[in-house]
Image (cartoon, rainbow, N blue to C red; front, side, top):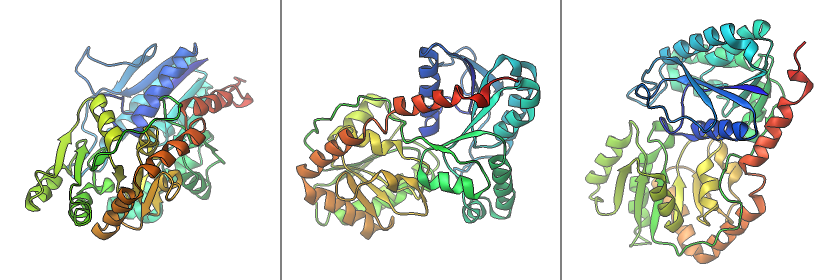
Length: 384
């Protein structure tokens, strides 16, 4: 089949769960013998694109900063990208059987819907998240109403929809969208049961340092947890607008020898840190899936996440088996969860490895890819 994958970011030029999903998806589709084109914004110097193997990458919008200083998505870049996607599909839509796009940041999905009558392709949309009206208001203030209405309009586009959690599948239908297929697998590593390494007294965070991740909460939480686990340390991997704030809090608390803010480092270094960690802590208040939870479990490392109305990572936690769900990101609640992991000892690492072995197939990229391909082959995508 001729498949057009659409997302405004391309891994590793930008790093995130959705970026990795679309790169992995594109590479696997190409490896299966499909003709794959990836539409994105240019995020690299001319001639230096790191393209997925076997995939034709086309930049349909210029290089632009995607985030404000506060870590929120800008409005202009998605508009420019949506116009570029629309122009491309109006010219080349007949070259594709399927256009597979991220729902967010929405304008690319609207572009695909507008171009479909001429291109006569099927539309697939991934809904990693469906934001509540309340969250839209918090995120954009008064303009949040416009964002919520655009999301509702996209939900009503004729599409085959995929979600990555039960939380957002339910929200999509509540917003007037179709009944989605829930894909639980984005993990692309080995499915064998891990042999957990001996834990070091280190808590690890890996991800973007943006407000939603609540990384500053780790500083007072680590200080509090050290009252019961004196040797405890913390490694923070990733970058973003919150990095300076985190570093300032570390210095202010006199914890420079305890908490290291490492920035982006090679993937092998992060994997090694995850393997040796006492636990991974993801204090996010908002997540559409939480791939890091599965990646940590694949190494036998327990995970601590935070309860929240917009946080789907809790669906991946079996309480007391592969980790704990803290009631909040307060120092007391996060510290209590970290201490519980420490007290559980090697037995929790073994139960985490067992949990992964039981769920590996369900959580694998291959499982999701099979369901995606089955959807592509359905009657919905047969040209009239």
